[in-house]
Length: 153
Image (cartoon, rainbow, N blue to C red; front, top):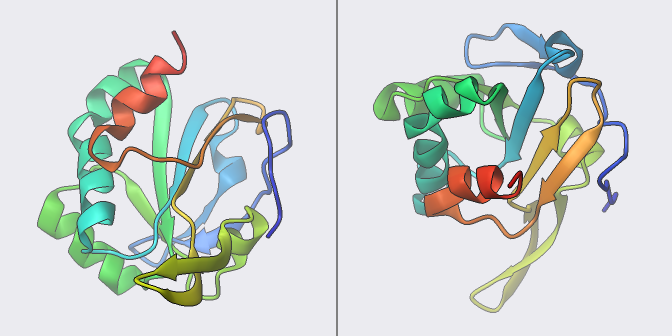
C-alpha cells in the first residue's frame, strides 16, 4: 500500500461518477475536498458514513467543503445508492481500483478470521491547492462530519 500523508500532493485522477460523466480531482482546485473511500454501497457502515456526510452536507458546504465518495462499485450501483439515501454529492465508480490504489487505500484486511484484499475506509481532506490537509484512517461512520469539523478546531 502507498502511504499518503499530510502535506503530500493528492494524486489527480479522472474517473466516472454516478452519471458516467468524467470527474477529475483537478476540477475542484480552489475548493477544499473531502474525498472519502469506502468499501461497498448499501452496506451498514458505508451507508452510515455516507448518510452522515449527506445529512450534514449544507453545513460542510457552508464551511467551504466539497464531498466526493469513492468505492469500487459501478456507476449504476452508485446511482441506486444516491437515490435510496438522497445523497447530495457525487460518488466515483472506481471499478478498476486505479483511484483507490493511487491513494493507497487498497490492501490486506481481516474480517471474521478471513484475510482478503479490500478498501480501507479512509478520508482525505484536500486543500484548495490539491495538497492533503488531513487523513482519517479511523473513521467514525456515524459521526464522520463532526470528526472532520472538530479536527479544524
